[in-house]
Image (tube, rainbow, N blue to C red):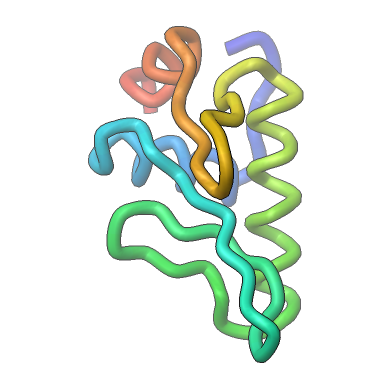
Length: 86
């Protein structure tokens, strides 16, 4: 990887690797937006939700994750490679 990723972004990569490369941004009126990867919901409190949403944006900006339609995101080839290095 070109630059170190924050811990939350690294965690999302590791979890996505175990979840067939899929990440989701879910949204409810009660909770707001949050990231879900596999069985992990990063939705416990506003701080957690924002930290992991920001981490997902970091991964998108680094070209490691891309939008796959609707609420679904997926690892790119460089994303898979980065996840394997963790």
